[in-house]
Length: 486
Image 1 (cartoon, rainbow, N blue to C red):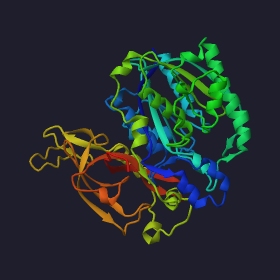
Image 2: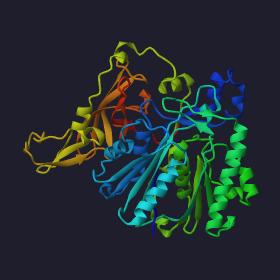
Image 3: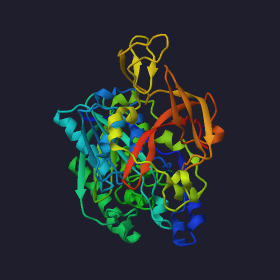
Image 4: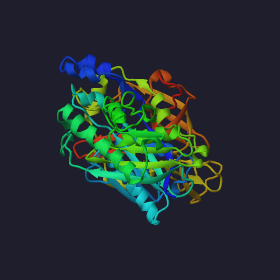
């Protein structure tokens, strides 16, 4: 049996109301009032597709031994690097073994389902046992456009295996058609689209029914056999008509997340799949349909193992964990869409040394420290001599990771002089459960919510961007744990 053994998701904390967007720039294109409903998820200034993929994978891997993962595929339309494997960066941050298979999937919004099918094929071949698939996107719509309203940021992660499967892959049907609805060339920040009516009539209303019909015919299924149908269609207005035309009921329709999160590109079908799994029952058949350059239709059947599964934030947990971003200008600054005066401290950007990044290895990428085998004291960074004054053992260390350790704020400082894209800069000391203390930057928080003793988790983020050389330095930051949405 081949299928999904675990799932996870990540949606950034910030939500930008589409009404806020329209009030700020709707004067330029009044026609966008038609899409100025609901809200969209917005990645923080220090997030990108890699950091979101790592966050979704972390959610997926809760309780799973990372040494058992044999491969990682990353799909994204917004990969930070054009010539450096992005999946390898994720693998390092997740502290996976070095002898695993990794690859990037891109250039089409169906890349997430294509990567998932490739992972299933690999596990089915019998060479590898557990394969992770991550999909993440943070696309930019040109200010004043419909796409600026519709796009949203997010990520999903699925673990494919053959043991303790919660959703078995029963079949698939794929179509490939060079249908040019959205196009973005190398070096361009914003995609270009053709007339919306043409995309709707020739794209959504023809390709999506063809995918569903193709799968139902291939496996001799009736529409009523499906418990849930998750269709990654960015236009909510199209789906009711498709469902009616094909004899499907609206009760079978999985929420597209467009109104609450936005079109998350290659991550959208997997985010919807995760949401469907969260409420699925044994025996349910779930159809996942991606769209883009054709599309993929994947059929899964839920097993009894789903009853034993839980403990993830998943899609629904992250949808509800949010804070309003009430400033359109702040969004523009986060995405580097308007020039701002960064001051002397912001202009003084040190070079990111590739040799140092490689030399420090998992110290930077996965917070690898050491633990004294003689007295049990955790320490960071990795040491040869134990820092415990009552021990002092030499070369008696074992690797010890802090990426999955909970902590609490020991002390903190709010700094209005240091440069940050989201002032003030907040940083301080974190005491970790089980031992160990790290000095870290804080993110995804407000000064009024930061207090001594507040619990934190660590999150993989952008630390520094060397724009002139095209190098991004990633590191971990402390995130105060938010229990309610605001």
